[in-house]
Image (cartoon, rainbow, N blue to C red):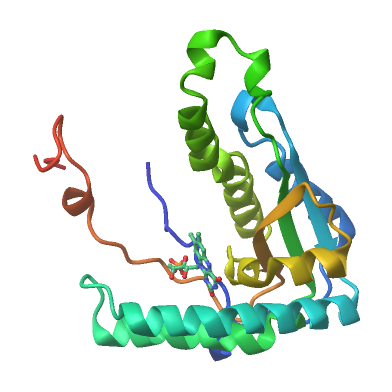
Length: 228
Ligand SMILES: Cc1cc2nc3c(=O)[nH]c(=O)nc-3n(C[C@H](O)[C@H](O)[C@H](O)COP(=O)(O)O)c2cc1C
C-alpha cells in the first residue's frame, strides 16, 4: 500500500488557512453520508450532526471555542512539550492551535458531531449476575462512549480530504459545552464530541510526521519491539 499520508489538521498559517468560499451543500451531504457509514456500538447509530453555516452562529461558536481554548492553553503550558517533539515542532503545533482560537468562526462550515446518551438498561431489568457487576458495566459504558462517534469523525476527516477540503477534529469547546448546547438547541440527553471547521484550504496538504511504528507497537507482549 502506498499513501502520501496527507490527511492533516488544517487550521493555520498563510499556507493552510481555510478560504471563506462556501462548500456546496451536496458535498456536505456526501461528507455526512460518509460519516454515517462508520461503526457504532451495537449499530446503534445514535449520532447526530449539526451543520452550522449561519455567519452569526459561526461567530458565536467561535467565541465559545476561544473560551474553551484559553483553558486548554493553560493545561498545555502546565503539561509541557512531549518528549518526542522538538521545540520547533511543539511551537509550530501550539501556534497553529492558537491561530484557530481566533479564526474558528471564519470557517464556512462548522460541523458539530454529537451523540445521544445511551445508558445501559435499568439495573432491575438485568439478570442477577449482571446486577452484581452493574457498577463495572457503568464504567465500561463510560469508557467506550466516544468510540461510537469518533470513527464517524474520522470518516468526515477522510471524506473532506477526498473532496479537497480541509478540516480537523477539535474538542476544546467541550469545556464550555453547555453554552454550545444552548446556542444550537441541543437536547439535554445529547452531547457534543467534536467541533470541525471545514473549508477549502489555501496551499497544499503536506505529509504528517509521526513517531515510527517500532517505537509504539509491540510483538506479542508489552515491551517486545515490533520488528517492522
Ligand atoms: C481527541 C482530539 C482532540 C483534539 N482537539 C483539538 C482542539 O481542540 N484544537 C486543535 O487545534 N486541535 C485539536 N486536535 C488536533 C491535534 O492537535 C492534531 O491532530 C495533532 O496536533 C497532530 O497534527 P496533525 O493532525 O496535523 O497530524 C485534537 C485531536 C484529537 C485526536
